[in-house]
Length: 399
Image (cartoon, rainbow, N blue to C red; front, side, top):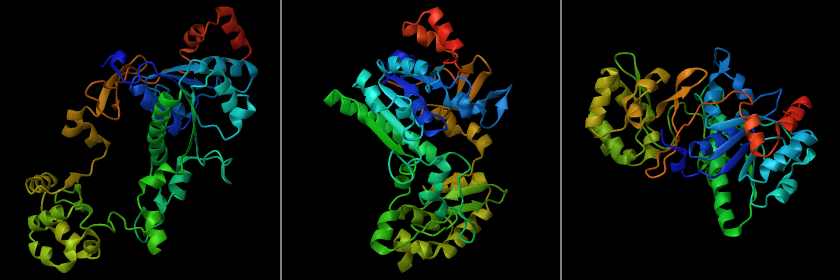
């Protein structure tokens, strides 16, 4: 593994006060590239991700991913003891990430004014469902609500079926990447101004951006995108197709040249001369005919033979993987997309690697998620607290 000194964010200190999932995942990404991340959890109510999903030997596996590269400490922020400790930490911190409902930090005496007073260079990233203002700001917000409100669910699913939500944290994950970008943008601004600032990120917004030009289409044309299943209103053929050995593949023809290669491959070159074949939108109007041509050809071939033929024709195809296939796929193996991490609690673990590769200052997974409060004493000692002071805080249930 690459040592932390080679990582590009070495020297950056991040305090992760957030839970489930956008804020903590942002902090994970920063930690993957060398930032020192301190995960602060309530003494009696750990981050719920520790209990989400399957466990092994009573240890949450999701936390091993979400908590990687973070030191963990416990702290009750709602009382004066916890407030004072956080302000001492904030004084020497670059970024704080939080996702409490708007007004919570202010109620505890830890709002932007108090934090900025101890550290004018601080960046405070506030990640909430609906943002810091507006009629919904004080509602509880989760990624599921963003997937519903953004228009994602409305366009996902079969035409005659219900709106469909993803079975994983899609909006949270998109928001996490957006927050990491926002934090780095704020830090770049700090280099020019010498001052930190507040990042206000609403989870309902990044997924709206990812969904593309739907607002423009509606604004200019009154067009509302319908549910089309695996098909697209922007190009065809584009679908999933079953092979002769009962496997599934996906085909995309976003580029005109690819669409033409596919039709030659499946023996329907005459369709290329049709007037409607010249653009993705007009091809989509004839998706039934195109799907039949491609589907019939693929149904006569095994998955491996179909993929091989598409590759030779320089046409775009991919197998439909489940996680078992992902773990064995040669391309993912070549990229080390799923990498092994040694963990003191569970032994060797395989999980997703860092998000991207840098040639000169790469990131690395230094450790998987650590036990609740594992580094509390070390962190407090680094602040100058003595053993008796730490014991007193424990007696007061601040830690």
